[in-house]
Image (cartoon, rainbow, N blue to C red; front, top):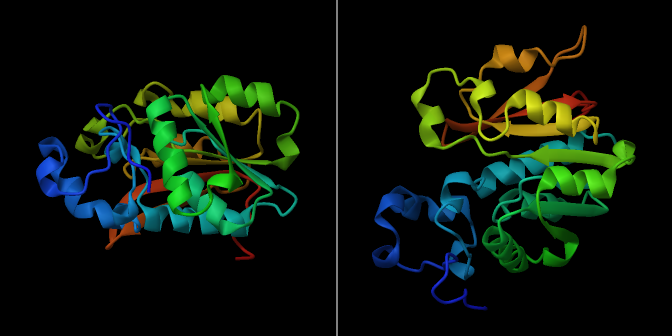
Length: 238
């Protein structure tokens, strides 16, 4: 397997001794985050804070595949990072095409390499650039075909210090901003948000006389995050 570039931000850590001290807890979690970690997964230091653990990514991908309208055949991962969710979506085999957007070139290199390890690198269209401008340029007018998944930045790990996280304080994009932007391009949007998100803020976006599906995703009984399913998802038929 290809080695990562030397003297750069991309790493293939193979021992605890070389792993950054500030990330020590992630070393012990590495194989619950990536089942194939030892096959040569690439990561940046920042990616450990944002990557979706593989069991959760797989569960989300299955839920989306089962509940999304059957006529929708394109899956967009708006903030692909090092590829955790995009890989899970591609492995489902449900989509005619998976698009993964990422503006950090180092994270994108990791994502493409990691997808190769999982055998789905050719099933994903990789796009380097800001997702908001790129999605607008590529998909304007295709709303009926698209399911859009977004795991946006939350503004650092400080969200965990609050009992209830104010989603207007997410940085650099608030809940309101993301909803309004992504709703232009898909009537089926999933946002991956902090587990302690303010549900009252989320409920404001529920259609009249309907409920929004909100699912907590857990590892070993502990919630890691939640997904909000905006739009025409059908969980009754699962």
